[in-house]
Length: 350
Image (cartoon, rainbow, N blue to C red; front, side):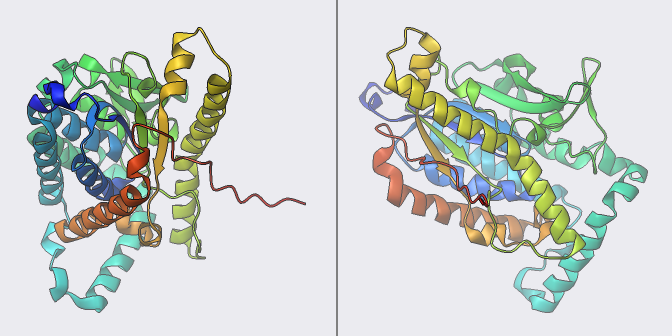
């Protein structure tokens, strides 16, 4: 992997990526990652949940095989395979459909999503995640991913019995582990690994931050690629709108908690000289949150299940644009300072 071994590039920021999940909105994350890979950075660790875990699998396997170019190629293979396997592929007529067609399709998807928890148990091809399994298996070098040690990769899933997060890493990052991380219980049957059952990692670690803060990784920067925004301008009043907001709050709760805790620990670690190796490593990492734009938050509640290639390409371009905007503001901070300045708290106080 020539990118990482070039002695002339030792001064590059050593970046760890924490990739949030979000269904088909993972294609937005794809665009963000692609734009970040255009920068002169060294990838030293990746953590992901749900769609973020799937993105991470393609990113890490491609990066280890052929640096930045390999990572970009692997991500494109992944999302092309997702679109090819999509049951909506025959409905991808692009601009030919017009606004009336798109409105009708979105309403149909809304109805399908609302009834999914009742219908999915009777659809074996949906319950076993076969489409996503085929897409990941066909596009990601899973053998390389499991045996590589250059870029530590951590996949979060939720252990159903205890309600705790489990992080799969190293040889334990299997196809089943990736499916467990993306297993939404209202759509898919629980994924069993070593006799234990798992659901989507977004419930408990979306994504996990702690494993990217170790002295062994030695990251200068951690960028959290957020897909689901903390705040929205308009919740909406339909059943679908309410369900989407409930889901968003649930899947952001652990990230909100972890960012608050990490920033507080960093304040302590930087104000006091600690002999603890872990505290010194935490103090050294510059923290960045790359939040999504309002355009992503404003999409319909069913857009997270719309895997048509034209839609994924739109999301990809949105990710490119948002990463470009973020870099324009914060590129100089990479390797030097944190750009994260706290959560967008808007609590109502007496």
